[in-house]
Structures are given as C-alpha cells and as structure tokens.
Image 1 (cartoon, one colour):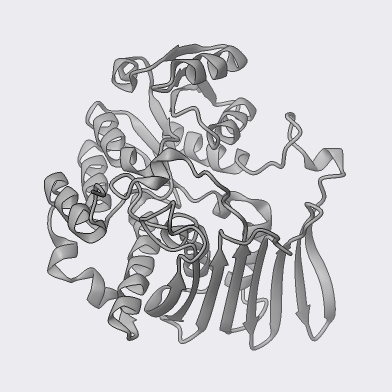
Image 2 (spheres, rainbow, N blue to C red):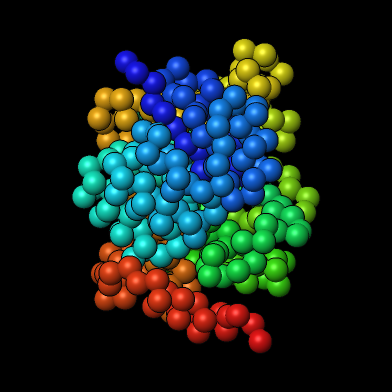
Length: 372
C-alpha cells in the first residue's frame, strides 16, 4: 500500500510530537512542513528531510492529507480548504472556537467525503485505552461515579494568540479540559446534565478569553455522576493527571506520577493490582526520540483510516461532544443552574450557520475587544 503524503501545518510546540508519530508510522510520509514563520518551517523540514513552505494553500495539490497543528482560530478555515480539495484532515483540538464553527467543519468534510479526525490523543495512549477497556468490559461492574483531576502551570508570558479572545475565546476548561471531558464521555458514558464553577484569578489579566481553574459536575446518561477538577494556574503542582472510576464490582485508578511513571490499578474482590505501567527509565517504553510514545497510536490510526477508508474513532461528530458539554457547563455557571446539555445545544444561537462577521461582533461585545 502506498504511503500517505502529508503536510504538517503549524511547526510550533505540539508539532514535535506529531512529527515523531509520523516518522514512526510506516504508512506516513511527511512531504511538507508549513508555517507562516519561515524559520520554523525550515528548521522542522531539515530534521524531517522534506520540503517546507509558508503558505499551506500552495502545497495542498502535492499531498493526500494535512495534519493541522496551528492555534484554534485557524482549524476550521484550514480544514474546510483542505476538504474542498479532497484532502484528508487531522486537526489538533480544540477543533473550533464555537459550536457553529465546528458544525461547519463537519458539514464540509462530509460533503467532500474525506477522512476527518480530531486529535484527542488520550484515546490513543495505552494507559487510557487500558482504563477504557476495563470500564467497557464491565470489570468494575456498573459505573456509579468518576473523577478526573489535572493540574499544571501554563506559564507567563503565554503564546501571543492566547491573549486575543478573537483567536482564543476560551480558557483552560475548553482548551485543556476537552481531553478529559472526552475521556469521561468515552469511558463512563454520554453526559446529559452539567454545572460548573470556575475563575481566572491567576491568568485572567493575560488570557482574557476564559478561565484558568474549574470544577465541573456531570450526570451521565447511565445515571453515573462525575467531576472534573482542573487548573493550569498551579505554580507548584503535586501531580499531573488522576482519573478514577468507581463501580459496583470494583474501582479503577489511572495516575501520571511526578517521576514520569504512568500506572493503572484495579481494585476488586480479588485485591489491588497494577494492570498497566509506563516507566520512562525503561528504554523499551520510550520512542526512538527519547520521549514517551504519546502520538504514535493517534498518527497510526489516522493513516490507517486514510488508507482503508475507515471512520476515525474521534471523527468531528465525536469531537464536538466535549465542546457541547463544556460550553453548556460554562453557560450553566453564568445562569447559576444545572443545565441539560441537549437543551443548550438546541438553542437557536447554537444552531445558526457559521458566520465569521457575527462571531467577530460577539467577541467585540463579550470581551470589549479590542481594548481601548
């Protein structure tokens, strides 16, 4: 089977993991590194051994697929332009700035008949797959409760695009939390109700688009309840990721330890035992570039879907679900109540066609932007 020719668009921080994934995938061939910053595009191209460009539109005719690693405000435009030219698309999360923009992407890729995948990378990491399989196989019985806690420090100064609410009308919850809300949906079940409390006490002066700390509560379709607690404004974190699920027959715990280890433990009537471990001190656990094998599964799945005409497990129709839940939770906080997710999704303003001018006007009003 011929290799899939790929252009990686956006050569910033997240692109390194994507490049590593492509280089490890036998079916992928990166033929272009693209960035508006010529130095970044050239630097990555020299490492990969491919061509480079500063205009993604100029390379689309030479590739089969694009891997979009740009800031969120560019995801929709690039996805639609690529799809209209028959190119398959992998785009970084969050897939769009609004539900209207996300639906536009989904409509255009389905009209074009191309593969469309949102980069919810956690679904393709072995520790999260182990956790998911244990949940779905009934190893802990019927799930009654789940909990995810993440903590980090984004740092100052943030990337310039994060300081502009037109480019980044969001904060930690939508940008960072989308991974973990997706995990709760995937492993516990669809979310039907939500409420939230949050603030931007630490980074609100430099990231005006949204929160930096949140505590959200969810009710799932199967009756389970869950909680997501996060912050990207903790200067001295004591952990990284903690994911737990409690069922009628047992409990699961996934931990990212401070020393780099990752473990999944199962506790039931047979006792407490470890069912997965990643240890960075073990060479066979690391990739060829000295990093964790975090992106390989995701890139391999995308390339397989392109080659075999399969639908990705994180197609845009799946990727939009975390957005719907998080934006409903944000609205619930403003309205000081618990909100039904589908009720929020069906509001006229969320069903309207994507309109760039209307969005810009909303940003100007919502954020008093640009500041006078």
